[in-house]
Length: 289
Image (cartoon, rainbow, N blue to C red):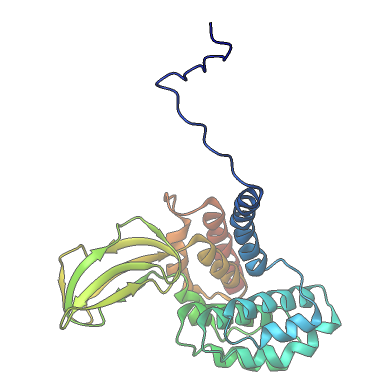
C-alpha cells in the first residue's frame, strides 16, 4: 500500500465557495444605506416649517428669492412671534409689506395671512387693501380674511367669492387629451386636464383653488377658447374660514351664498354646516330680521 493518502474528490455538484465582501466593500455598503436613510431626513429637515430659525436665519430666508419655501418658512415663524406678542417680530414688518408684491403666489398667500396677525399695524392694513386686487383668488381671499381682523369689511366680495366654485375655462381652442375624474379631491395648482392646441402644443389646465372636481371635460372633447373645462368646488377649510368671517361682517344679501352649506351633503363637513347655520343666525340678529 502507498503511504501517501489518496485525496478525497469533492462531489461533482459542489459549488466553489464565493469569497466574502472585503472590509472596504462592507463600509461602502453601509455608507450607501446610511445615505439612503439620511437624504429623506435632510429633505424633511430643510422643508419643515416647524424647525426654529435664528434671527440671522430669518433675515436670510426672508430674502432668499431662489427658494420660496425658505421665505414661507420664515413668514410662518414671524407670524408665530407676532401671535406670541414677541416685540422682536417688528423688525421684519418692512419685509412683510415688501413680500405682498412677491412674484411667487404661495409667498403672497402666506404673507397675507401673516399680516393679519397684527391688526395694529397701519402698514399691514394698507398692504392688505392693495392685495385685494391680486391676480390670485386665494391671495385675494386671504387678504380679505385678514382685513376682518382690522375691523375692515372692504374685502367682503372676495370672502363671498371663497364660497363659490371655481369655473375654469380653456385658454385656447383645442382638444382635451387627458383629464381627471369628477369627484377627485385636488389641491391648489393641481393638474385637472391637458389641452392640445395649435401645432401639437399642450397646455396644462390647473385648479386655482383647493377642493373637489365637480365636473370636467372628458378626454377627446373639442373646446373653443373660453369654453368651460372644469368646475371645482371649494375645500371645506376654505369655506369654513369664509363663513367665520361672514359671521362678523356678513349682510342679508350674503345669505343666498351661505345657505347651500347648511344642507346635509356628503362633501360638506359637520363643522362647515354648523358654522353656516351660526353665520346666518348672526347676520339675521345683526340686521334685525
